[in-house]
Length: 71
Image 1 (cartoon, rainbow, N blue to C red):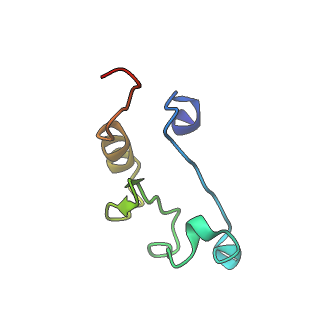
Image 2: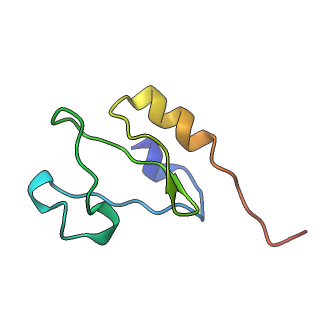
């Protein structure tokens, strides 16, 4: 998918099946929306509202800050 292929060294992706969502700490207590694939975009331990809309996912991901080692 485009999300996996885009380079962002500060990105972490986690995926799980609905019945196994509590086995991965990253997905604990993060429910699906109406049984659809749901994306949570988080930055610096704060998550934005979850969405199942791919267009909104792209907008949220592109809005994430990038960090560098140079001041």
